[in-house]
Length: 173
Image 1 (spheres, rainbow, N blue to C red):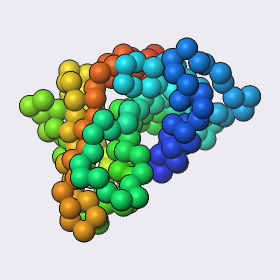
Image 2 (image 1 turned 60 degrees about the vertical axis):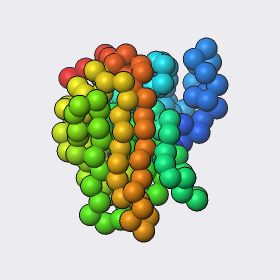
Image 3 (image 1 turned 180 degrees about the vertical axis):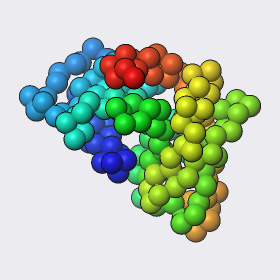
Image 4 (image 1 turned 90 degrees about the vertical axis):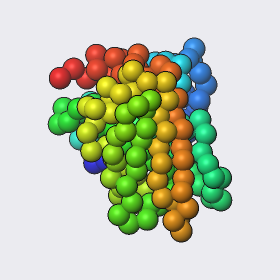
């Protein structure tokens, strides 16, 4: 299910409707296509159907990634709200994490632990991550990259609280 969300996220972020900016809200005729809820500074909020149920999510791309890795795809952080689970936080790394890699995300003075599976990392305590994101200015993810290279990805949290409110309203508990 998480892999499906990440694949959908990749399709959504590549969509012209999402790339056009906040004044462009053209929606697809496909009822299963993602629907834009809004853009909130550095975050975008949307919904899509997954197994017949509405999933709401907010996402942002990394503002900085170091070192530059050849062939690395987009680095995206996503928070999803589903009927089956709240505050699911994931990072799509743009490369395959070495097996057993842990990711630590620092938000101001707090640290959140993520576990990895292939090209994604998932918060162990999503509600803690969401609370930290709502109060913070930036999230800095540190992990081991290909061949053990230390990798640091920085995400802006500007607009996160508003984007999270939008998805919480669209997908209430």
